[in-house]
Every structure is written in C-alpha cells, then in structure tokens.
Image 1: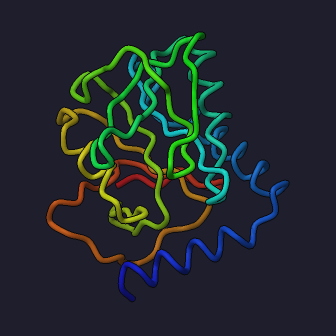
Image 2: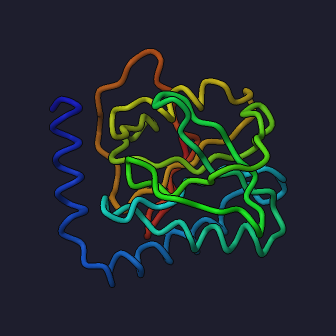
Length: 185
C-alpha cells in the first residue's frame, strides 16, 4: 500500500469514530502518557487538535503538562512551509489557520534544539516507529532540527501497521501512545 492509500484508510477510520468515543479514547491516551519515562524534562511541544480531521483531543495531555508545571510549546506555521514553536502562556491568543489548526497569534519563540519532548501528530505508524502524517512535511522538517536527545512521541487511536512507506529523511518515533498500549521503538 502506498502513502496516499494509508492516508485515505486512516482518515476514513477516524471519520467512523463518534465524538463521544473520540473523547474517551483521547482521555485513555492521556492517562497512558503518565506511564512514559518523560516527566523529568522541562520543555514539551504539543500540537493542538484539528477538530475537523478527528485528531485526538490533546487538551487532556495539555492539562497534565500544565498540572506538572512544564513549559509548553505549540506550533505556528510560517510561510506555509516551516513551523515556529511558541511558548504557551496564560495570555496566548489563538486563531484557526488555513489548515484548521489552532495557532498562537504571537508569542515567545523557542528553538527546536531547546525542546525535550515532542508529541507528534500522525495518521499511521508502523512497528519500527516510522510515522505517516498528512504529507506536508511540517513535522519532518521540525523534528530534524531538534537535538539528538529529544524524545518523539506519537499519539494514535490505532495499532501499528507492519510497515508503512518511509523516506531516508523520515525521523522515527521513540514511543507511540494508543488508548490501550504504549509502543517503544
């Protein structure tokens, strides 16, 4: 199966999940995140949910990070190809981007090299930690700029595929959290 077929498959699977089930699955993923060996770090990057794509609700993980008094960065797309990483503060104003992503209007930018843990959006992933996103390359370019010790954590409603197509430039995940299990790669 090629990348586009995997994308269609997982977008279709997501579309079949009720809003109520999606909330329950998102809570289960957040609860499972507490089992990861990541909580001694300080700087966390998390994506904000694209509601119309039925992504997991990252608000629950965000609340855990806030409760643990972590520094949280959220992405903002710049020039339709790169992301900046803005420190989330009490007064951070958000707006929906052209992609339907809640983004900060402005704020304090943090370099990718300063981020310890990245929660990574995905459509599919495989048993080796290769991930498949929407195909725009935003996260591939971002993860490449992180330091070698940064941990990459996928969040998925589904179990892994045996193999998904990947490129040499793709950066694998360290972990993936599902509602029922944590995968370590």
